[in-house]
Image (cartoon, rainbow, N blue to C red; front, side, top):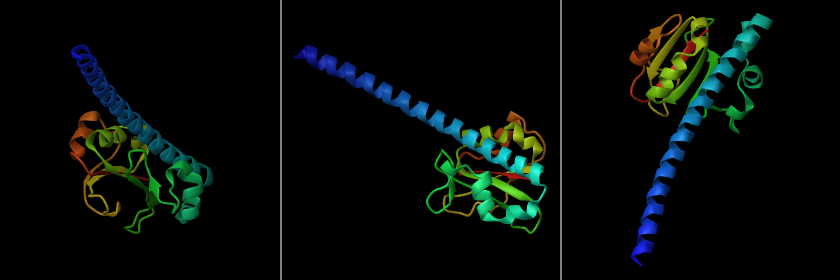
Length: 170
């Protein structure tokens, strides 16, 4: 009986360690997938703009949803969500300028930093980070802004501990 309890205790410890490792691996996988999704959206946007040179057609939600955002990221109501469960958006800037913005919201600090140091950031007019609570529109808020390529130290200082929304302005 004592040996059986010992075996059960060992199995329990190994199970807890396995579950913790699996959870960490899944979190890392989702972060990498979110980075890939951001790169795909930005490269699709840049490719479209280089080949059509027509920003006015980009005002169409159907163009954005069919050519820019991968189908896997759209839910049944055509709302964009990234692999970490947060919201994303591609749209014209709400301030009336001709800029387009790619936004990824509901990010923790690690995801925020990783998205800021993407190579595509250097092609953006500017990159900004806002602290946005869940449910708040991604277009709201004032945050920290940078232009050009972003170094790791800059990215760390731009990101908040939680509730980050990264925005690339093109």
